[in-house]
Amino acid sequence: DIQIMQEWINAPKTRQPMGIRHPFSMPEEYNWLEETIHSDDHMLFFVCVDGESQPVGNVELFNIDTKNGRAEIGCWIYEGHRRNGYATAACELLVEYAFDELRLHRIDAVTSRQNTASKELLENLGFNPEGAAAEAMFLQGEYIDELHYGRLATSR
Image 1 (tube, rainbow, N blue to C red):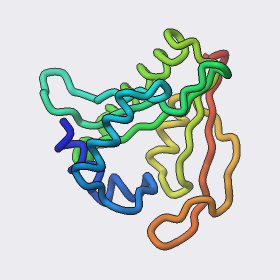
Image 2 (cartoon, helix red, strand yellow):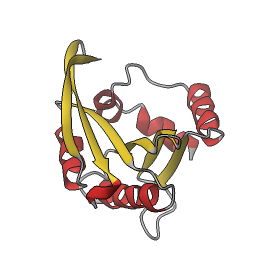
Image 3 (cartoon, rainbow, N blue to C red):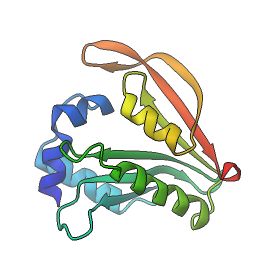
């Protein structure tokens, strides 16, 4: 699946809203995946559709801090598969896993003010807006606001 991951993460409509400035080479993508797989504070899951062999995206928990009971969530669905509910379904499962199995207390998320799809997804998943960092991201030649969201296990 590494080839499809590299192809999709390098697509400008996927890469740019995530703040990734340059395309990844195959060795860079491979190294990132190897580090992720062997990391104690990062979990990556492919999003697959029943009956299909190729993933349509991925979801991840990263910066997992079991001492303080928190992690950050991320999700991206490959172009051409968006607006089908895959992100919502996958993130719902991941949030449930984080709270029920990992026993986390809090999940954080960060997106840009311009990423309306991510903002809608987070709010639909019960994440609360917690503030903005003005001009904290440099994206496509301009500084833009970074929005912070959070969800507590007790808010379920």
